[in-house]
Length: 638
Image 1 (cartoon, one colour):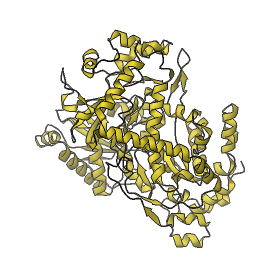
Image 2: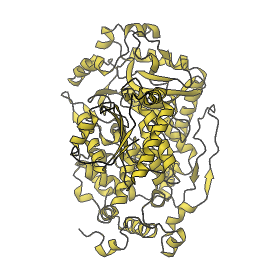
Image 3: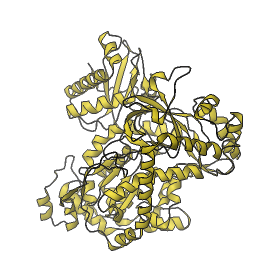
Image 4: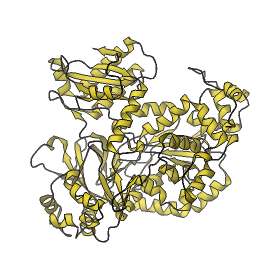
């Protein structure tokens, strides 16, 4: 391998705690002018009221893009008609949603009943076009995947009419990551895909309209393959994001730094190296998009740990390691050819600053788009630390079963219910165990209340309980604004305290802010020892004194007591013991992810780290799986 020489490497290898040099020192080091773009003045994007029919991005600060290639500006020019059409569609939808949510939802229900009329499920449950919402509720119970499993099994063998109408063409099955059970197969149809793409487009077009220079820049989107396997009937099974990427027009595809063929790479290490080489090899990135913020952290932190690998891959190219056949493989090989100049530029950045910070690697980078609510919020503080000066935007609540919300503001996970695609119902959390609960429609919600969200979709699912718990935060006209809290399965109760995952995440985040102690990953689980209670397992990358751990555990305890009255009462009466805290090595968390993905069949991009695991066997099963069962741990008892 020709690569960067050892002599060159010695000039920039980072010590354990590199000293970050000042910008003046960087200039003295002779860095190219592009490295100073991050010092350009920023512009304030005026905020707009939520009732503005155009929607609102909020008022984050964005840098003024510079050094944009002429070819990118030409591409942006020819994309203007498409962006204008999408912007008009978004404005029309927001106006209609604000004026009459009820009428729009009722029309969607009739469209879905008509679309899949004639299916075996529709016949079995007496579903016909024209039936009322109450009639639907009388005919179909609130259900989970198990009600549909026999019908889906028939579809896997080729009998699409088990759930779908004649005109509703099946394209693939989306495999869920199995947060609450083993893998599930969700039918993705032509109507489903159109709705899914429309939701993403309405969210994205507001960014393109309001973020300076974004249409001129590239997007790094990290997706998974839509064809990880085939059903007995030959239908692809995988991730819907891969299907969307494979169907993009050449003009739209040119916006993306990562070729669609990368999603089909099965070797996880090679895929990561390809993504890093492509992303860091492109100086004109304006936005990163992926589902989980942990995916972004894994990429950035892998470069922090081993920048030598990245620079070598950029210098030498990775074309010889690509085995994708056909034209897609040829395009991918061309994309990962040697970029020696870019490698040298990044080497200069590393020499000057002691690190490859995103704001220096990509001077025009404006947005990090990922989940920010629920358990994903546990990663956001670390992501903000690494991506200093870059706006983090939530792209809404979505799952294999469909998109559900569209954020109307930056820096918030709350979004407007996408009432034009699915028919939604809501089950109040406190009524979930009732034999005959009172279910609400979208326009009947109360701000501040928590609900399970029920979906009726073009996939042939009706009143499907996805087991996501959301909180209504307000309304955009008649349409509710919702924020994701946690999966319903992620509630733990030893003596009736009913701790939710969102409460654990909020407690740990608050403790991090108060203590200054940063834990990249954590999981709380119940344990039945001499006195029942909870253990908080944490991933601490830096050495931490026992006194710091004790204070951190105390702060988590205080925060949890303030958020859960039942937990506070159980602690005061001694029915629950104090929180125990254990630090685990990074390798243990990696093994946990691999084990859960292997069991669920999901992709790394879909992985949702469990911040609360109600299973009391977590301790023994997890530690044994990681080979840690007999090892001592740093532990704190309050």
